[in-house]
Image (cartoon, rainbow, N blue to C red; front, top):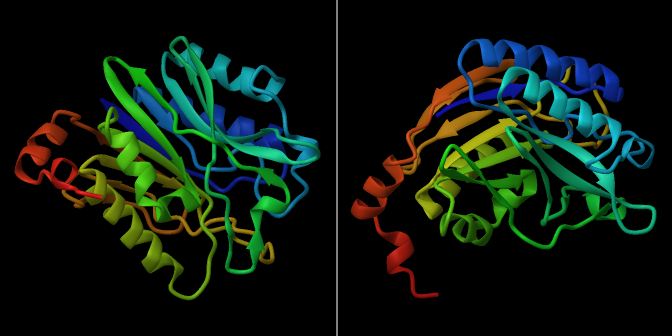
Length: 258
C-alpha cells in the first residue's frame, strides 16, 4: 500500500491549512497514494487559543477533509482539535475517506519541557485502529511515542502505526525523536510512519510547532526514508506482510514476560 507523508507547516488559520491539505491530497493521489498522512495540529498550529478552532468530527472542517478524500479516492489522516471536557479541547487525529470517518484522541498529553498541554486539552482514553484494503492501521500522536506500551497494544492487530507529531524544538530533541520512532518500531516489530510538522520559519515561543524529520521506519527499526526540517512529502510503498517475517525472526512480542 502506498502512503504519502505530507510534512507541512500549519498556520493559525484553519481555512488556509485546509487549502494546503487539498493541494497535497491531489498531488499524492495523482502519484498513487492510498493513504495520505498529515501531522498533528494540521487544522491549526499550537501557540494560539485552540477553543475557538475546535469542531466536532461532523463539523465543517472535518467534513471538508472527507470531501477532499472522497474526491480523490484516498484515506486522509490529519490532526485537528475537537471539543473536550469543559473549556478544553481534544487533540484528535481525523481518519476520513473510503467510507471511514473517525477520530483518535491523543492519550498522553505533553506536560514536559515547560509546556502543559493538559491545561487546555482533555486526554483520550483508548487506542484506535482502522482498516484500509484489508490492512489494520493504528494511530498515535507525538508524545505518545515515549510510551512503548501503546505501540505494543496496537501491535496485537495493527502491522502499521501512523504517528502524527508537532514535536517541540530544543537541545537534543531531534535526536530523541529519531531514536524514539525507531525504538517504537522495534518494540512493536511494526511499521511506524512518523509525519511531523515542518520546522517553522518563525519563532512561536514555547509552543511545540515542529522540527520536521518525518520518517518511514520498518519493523527492524531501519529508516527507509526521512525528511529534514523543510516542508516535503515522502511516498512510501509499505508491505505489511514484512511484519510477519520480522516477528518470526525477532519474536519480542511473543517472548515478553511483563
